[in-house]
Length: 198
Image (cartoon, rainbow, N blue to C red; front, side, top):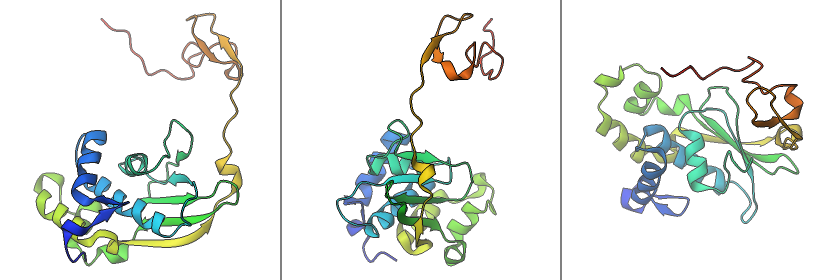
């Protein structure tokens, strides 16, 4: 447990400052983002100083935002990848060697923190949770609910997809990757997320 929460640092930022940063980026101070900050901090403490690392998040929820707020890794620059595994874990690794560390929310360690455990496993319905007690417990637990392990990442995972030629769709007249076929994925019916507006 942290001796003094005012002295708690997340990647060099006082905890309150980090919470303000994530609220601005994410829209609120979500419990998963506070935990994610401790995860990124723990990963960086277990990596060589001054080197750039790529990151893989195993969850789409909250964790990628903590990575994007605290590191230069983002979805847009390709240094952050999200694998839809659903585990609350992230791996920081050297894209050339694959050497890195994986930090994860440890289910055994969470048992010592009932508010966190009940929130994570959805034991208590959200409307019945004591949000302030949960946040106090997360801040107090810090990295005590996490584990870290050395890993080696398959170098194939970090290869960036090369840009392909761009074609103009004969139906919508918009540019799209030519490798997708004769029409864009919307006009070919492969992907359809838009509905006609009335």
